[in-house]
Length: 372
Ligand code: NAD
Image 1 (cartoon, rainbow, N blue to C red):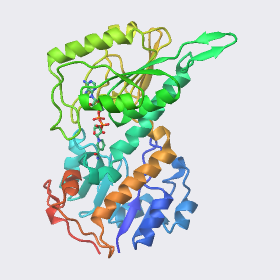
Image 2 (spheres, protein in one colour; image 1 turned 135 degrees about the horizontal axis):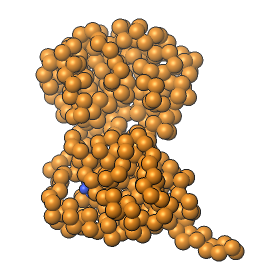
Image 3 (cartoon, rainbow, N blue to C red; image 1 turned 180 degrees about the horizontal axis):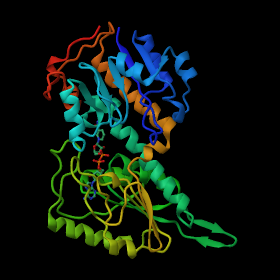
Image 4 (cartoon, rainbow, N blue to C red; image 1 turned 30 degrees about the vertical axis):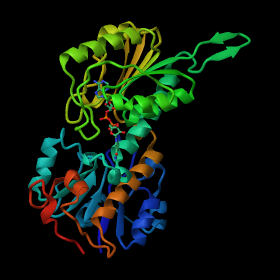
């Protein structure tokens, strides 16, 4: 029988890779699940709850030594492991080249779920989407809690307050949820994106899409954006500069896969924002979309508050863990057959894309050996 291990994440991470409901389903399907003691505490899932779902509570070293498949979200604190183990998490292989190389040297099989293809069959496993959705929602709430005005229009006996103006740059999963959340709170929302196909989605959420002509064609980039030429960048910056003067809250989410985030908002543009404005930069981990962003920090830029945070999903740990665990359970369905045996189809498009290290030390998982 396969033993699946759930690790406690590093101290700054509040999420866990699976909650008790998904553990119960795995146990029911014939797997053994070992959970590192305290793994779910910050997501409000106690050892007792895991145990009543059929999991066995163990120490970290026991989980690492015995589990065939090890679940985590982050990978940086996982020590050297025995050959043949399978790791599943969000390991960002395009940025963490050395970590992945070390795992290849240890002959581990590693599936990094941020590498899943953006295809319909992979939607239920898409950790980037489940976590970005939370980040977009939380970005608006965070901004609203700092912003010194209302978001909705208020008409009171003491006078009227106009609605806040929110600008969203990047209408992917996080951006679309930010639009929806800001609209629910009554703000007026303007949106920039380089992929013209998002215009309809933006409009259906009640946002105003600001078109900048001449964006590079991203139709062959698997749903991701591509880098833009200098001429387009200049036109886009001019348009952002014009609109940002009237913006109260700016939420930036623009990413280009495997590259530094595009810098779309200059220091001068930030200085031109209204007093008390707030910027939440969700792209901070890859450099940020503004010239002033500092990753994992809140700074004052004149009267503008700028928050750089690419890990806002972790600030909603209970639901973030629940959805992450469901994504992982769905992915495990591709690895484990109905007899409870590891049975990996190395030709599967999803497996090929997510596998960043395999026992053969190549990028092909074709030599994965079954564990029974
Ligand atoms: P992302 O996080 O890679 O990027 C965020 C957004 O920033 C994107 O909309 C991108 O176009 C935009 N952007 C990049 N450079 C920009 C620039 N210079 N100026 C303005 N905007 C810029 O995107 P994502 O959230 O991962 O979503 C990408 C697409 O993939 C979306 O259309 C989403 O609906 C789709 N998707 C499909 C599936 C699936 O079918 N399984 C799953 C998830 C996402």
